Amino acid sequence: MDISDILSPVALKVASNATSKKRLLQDLSELAATTYGLSASAAFDALQDRESLGPTGVGHGVALPHARLAGLDGVRGVFLRLEKPVDFDAVDRQPVDLVFALFAPEASGVDHLKALALVSRTLRDAAVCAKLRANEDPSTLYAVLTEQKSSKAA
Image (cartoon, rainbow, N blue to C red):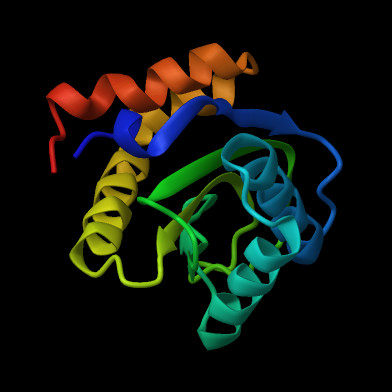
């Protein structure tokens, strides 16, 4: 599995209007709805439900919110780079500015976990995060995220 298998080239953007965790989850849900035809409200509710179990801010300015949704045919992702970091209740108590959300079918099982591990490994790489933070063009962000597939295969 590669990031290009789960992330559409149009599922990335730089966001300036996220001022809270709730607003950020709404932005992610709207991007998923636009890109993959999901219900924005169902995606938001699923992300909120998952966050209530424990925050998905993994540290170093990175969050990996994820949820299961009915009606998906595979794991799908959206990525936001925030112009201004937002408090996300991360494990290191630092605000986040790189957010990769995953949406998986309700019965995805191992595929969901593989996708989560792949994204986590990719965003644990300080060089990748530095490149993402240094760029605003969605096509460049996509290239940075997907170029890792050869050296970081799942």
